[in-house]
Picture 1 (cartoon, one colour):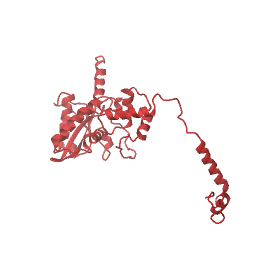
Picture 2 (cartoon, rainbow, N blue to C red):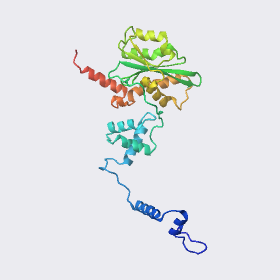
Picture 3 (tube, rainbow, N blue to C red):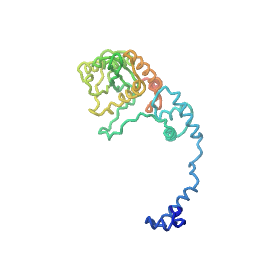
Picture 4 (tube, rainbow, N blue to C red):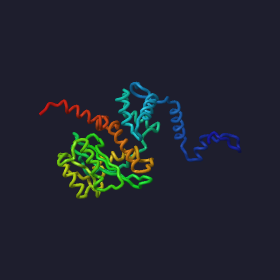
Length: 303
């Protein structure tokens, strides 16, 4: 405005006249102008510290290649960082991988809601297998058969899916099927007391509170362990697996019937156990963690 020309006099208004008309101190105007000039002349800041072994451009190419090769959808930066570090030998900071993925819109769109603090301070992760399993069920709609159920049983130690069942009617009998599958696969028996010492974490659904369900798991020697009411995080291992299941093969897909859904669940469970990276396993899949455990146990001297 100060450089504009007055139409009456043909002269510039000037800084003094404009500042007086607007009630603005000239010292403030010149101070702001000097700051703007200093900022414009200042060279851009350079990256601090030593020069990294791989540039951001090359790291972005490696991240995109890893996401393209992964069979999973919606993975976060932790799994990408682990695969780059372990499988490709690219040793970079996890926060740097996070920054590169965020700047290029490569982060997972799945985000959970922020919640308040939990009143419980315990943990549900065990330090050895076959101490606690978790079980839960989800409903999925199919075109021909309507609503159907998926029941799963998850090992708390390594997040392995030890059993699953897909059915039309989600009653107490169907809820027992993944437990029976897990016992037959890992204990080689479904007889009385076959799983003595195992606890089963579950919510307060009608299937799990029924006399038939509770009596059957007690027959197997399983101790019932119920989650806190209205706190699904206390059954978090099974809940987290079901969330992964829905993100990978349920959301955004349409299934014609229960048979088609059952085939999809079967393929997912096999691939999940063999390839899904779990941070608490030391970035090993559930199957790799169990193999490492079995190998370590075989080397222990007999008591």
